[in-house]
Image (cartoon, rainbow, N blue to C red; front, side, top):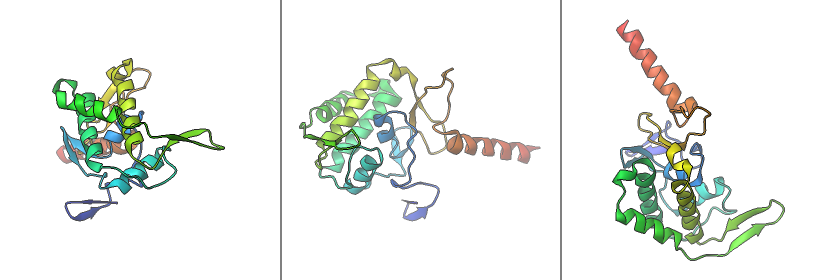
Amino acid sequence: MMVRNGAIDPAVPSMDEIAFFGGRLCLDFVNTANWVDHEALDERLTGMEALAIWAFRQGLSETTALAGRLDDFLALRQALRRFLATPALSQDADLACLNRARAQARAPMIWRQGSGTLVGSPGAGWLLRAIADSAVEVLLTSARERVKVCPGQRCGWLFLDESPNGRRRWCSMATCGNRAKARRHYGQRRRG
């Protein structure tokens, strides 16, 4: 459950419950909020603890503790939203933000024995860099043309359309797609 406008809204999953539909790390990061145009709604990045939970659930961290500045992550998320959803609206400041994130101190990565996973240290610089590197990979490859914005009401999530015909419309058919079908069906029944 998530708090929206001071009240608990069970329809908005918290960081512990949020699904990962983006298909790339940077897209799932942008999807830590719902969007109308470029306005973040239903904020889930409410603090470094929430960010640590997201990183843990992504398999990037063994801990739910991170040290860093949340403002750096929120600025990167906003810049990535413009770059990936509407590149024509991106600004020089967005590129500067992306470059700052990529230039973060190369904090040592840790090899997790037994699982073969590379994870970052408790400082958050490595996570900023990982998200920024994921975005650069999307922006500089053919994946960029397959990034779509979910038209779901109060959603606006980004996802990589990897469907064979390139016609995926929703972040998830089980959520936004079904809600749209239900609204359409209800509207038809009311009119008829």
